[in-house]
Image (cartoon, rainbow, N blue to C red; front, side, top):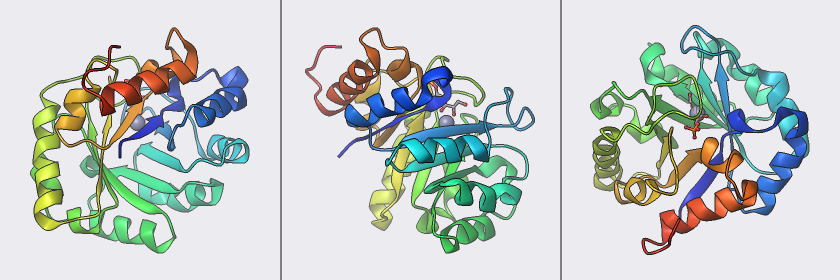
Length: 224
Ligand code: DX5
Ligand code: ZN
């Protein structure tokens, strides 16, 4: 079963509650929240109080994608704000095992993300502990970037590890995901698709974006 995770980075923040309602009604499975600090990745986005606001207007699970320096310092704040799934990056967490255990002990699911230039094998020793592995298919920072197709191979490698070890770990893909590439992402092993532009900027509205993405991900013969 494919899950769709709208990324609020491209939502209309003057009508955020309406956008979230539309996403929920159109069958979104979870809400993806990009936290960027201008250090780990360019752009400055949102913090715990936005997560709290989102949590107050949707019943969907919230996944918080931390693209910040020292993410370990903010885990408690995001969980208190309503996070359900916390995703840190492999590249800037030296004590990944400790951080992943801590997130789970606090009652969240734990995910680890890989930038496009980071190989799949860097997750080998932590995969068994993860609820989610996230393949970044753009360099983190902004929505609206072009999908980097060389990351498909990384998805295949991680899916293989998940199958070989029989893990209950989701494989999420984030960046440049749209109806045109949804099918190849799913074929490469992705089972959760994050999308900002393809959902919140869809010409037929948020519902149209979610339905189009899901149809293309689940049905190869569907037209965009
Ligand atoms: C990028 C973020 C993504 C981004 C995706 O740093 O992690 O979640 O919002 O945006 P689109 O779907 O437009 O590429
Ligand atoms: Zn993201």
